[in-house]
Image 1: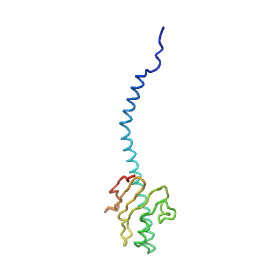
Image 2: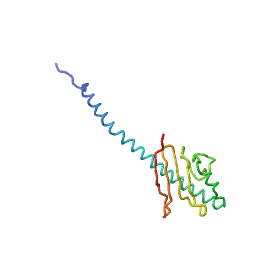
Image 3: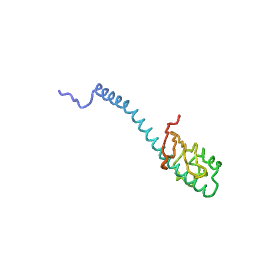
Image 4: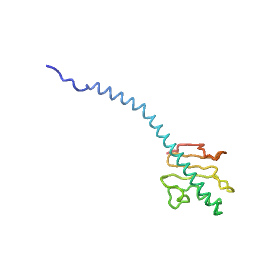
Length: 144
């Protein structure tokens, strides 16, 4: 009589499971780092979009002659998803759980010089360089 050996033995199955477990253990930290990097890149992109909206807002307020410290204080701490917030007409949405922590503006020219942006995962500090480019200087993960 012939035996039918079409299946795997328990030892072979356990060996495959152990190998897959080791590979998974090696890949999980890498996947976590990739996700953190993606969240940081998204936060920098959102911060730049927010900075552009802030600059457009500042230009409009300055043209009206209303650029004061009170105007800047209204920006600080404002939730970007708020439909009644100062930037409601300047942002197209999609920035839930995001806010402007602080802004540094030249009140004479109305130019945004520095902004600290924060979402649920990340803080991004943008600084205006000499060439007029906003550069992300500090990017930090927020504590849970």
